[in-house]
Image (tube, rainbow, N blue to C red; front, side, top):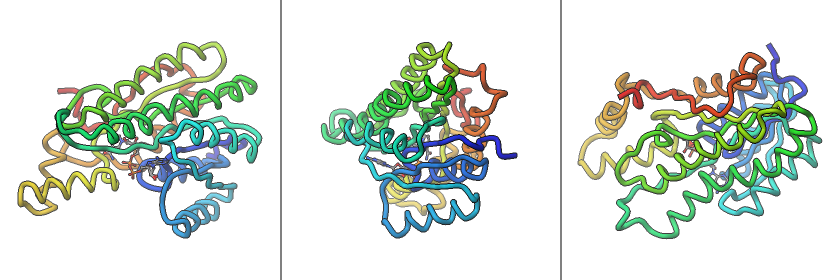
Amino acid sequence: MKTLENRVALVTGSTSGIGLAMARRFALAGAEVVMNGFGDPAEIDALRESIALDSKTRVHFIPADLSKADDAQMLVKQTLAICGRIDVLVNNAGIQHVAPIHEFPDERWEAVIAINLSSAFYTSKIALPAMHQNGWGRIINIASAHGLVASVNKSAYVAAKHGIVGLTKATALENAKRGVTCNAICPGWVDTPLVRKQIVARAEAQKISVEEATRSLVGEKQPNERFVTPEQLAELALFLCSDAAANMTGSAYTMDGGWTAQ
Ligand code: NAD
């Protein structure tokens, strides 16, 4: 069913991983989609074209470096200029840096907070008035299990993800009477480039194979010992855009194989 027909959806950080799966799923549900993120221009264009072909909807790519406030705001302004409206905003772009606080580089702290937290404030700030005009909107912030619990050596990420769960609640309350909902999704481990880097680093540090490092990384946190998939997360995001989810707002939904139940 084309539940997002006549809707415009912007997904930040959608050239890879979770965001890419969401962009694809929303397009298949009928939305006009705006993609964003880093990568090889030819590869991004091929992705954009393949999604457009499969879904038969319009798919755009707007470059923006979400570590910069101006770029984040411009991304939504350009979406409005090109598509004429914005109905769904997924704040998904994110990076990770792993180090203890006493060794954490200042520049990495600033980058993680800017991309994983502040960019969602700047995009929402521009998108909300447009959603108010239509009396309908969905903002979905991709947080993490680390938005609810902490792990060692991920101070900036944990702070940013706890922050975005708070921003989600504030956004939900401010817009509760305007037909706009805002929720966070908190995934456990998902096999994407963001996590691959951590697996390879673990394999090197512990002198074990990548397969063993994968098993120990996932099993250490997730009782079900299985990766969450980008496609499963995309289905949850699509559900949050449905009419059935109209009264779901201000919440953080986990999909984490039991990680945060412990
Ligand atoms: P990924 O590395 O596959 O994708 C990240 C995306 O963000 C890419 O498109 C990248 O180009 C984009 N990006 C990075 N920096 C950017 C910048 N400055 N400006 C614009 N775009 C930028 O990672 P992923 O695992 O798909 O992560 C997506 C989101 O999900 C992140 O917010 C991440 O924290 C969150 N998350 C991931 C996992 C996991 O296990 N992979 C778990 C929980 C939460």
